[in-house]
Length: 258
Image (cartoon, rainbow, N blue to C red; front, side, top):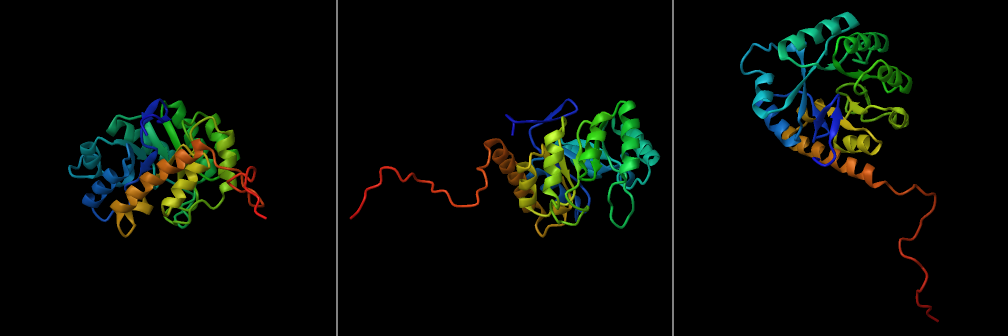
């Protein structure tokens, strides 16, 4: 929403939905889905794309006017991630980087030690770092302390569609963070995105939930509305949860019938 932008490292975005590009059945489907999502920022795995090749994902993003967020997907060490980020900056001319350092190929969970080490190096090197991390409030604080522009905890494993498995930890991260908190990984449908925003996340990052949906373009539109609706609900302030019912109409002034 234009009157409620998301700010990441000095950059302003009207959309709070960050899209990924992995898993799309074709570039045509990806393009239609990106348009339907309304996204202004989309990740590209630099280890899986050649910036010099015409007709790639990068060409689609350029045509749509969507800012590229290079990521370090596929890296297992801090050194690999730092090298990939530097190559991306040289190729694309951007200091933005979505930092991903995974522990193993089976779970695709973040390696906290390598992630923190890479984040510190990249921040010192002038990057605007957006790290993929565990839903650990302590690690989130440490990433913020080394200078990350946001923290991006997972709701559940990448591509699992299990949603946010630990809402309490997300609330703790949001309550203590001084930088935007963005759900990264695990969303399976629109309600997951809405919940993230209702918990106080500044945005939602997703890919598989759209690219592997039966109708990607329609799911992209659903995610767009879910993020907007969840954000509005957060700003509006939900009613307190109660143990017993509370009538919405006052009893005072009601006629007494004998």
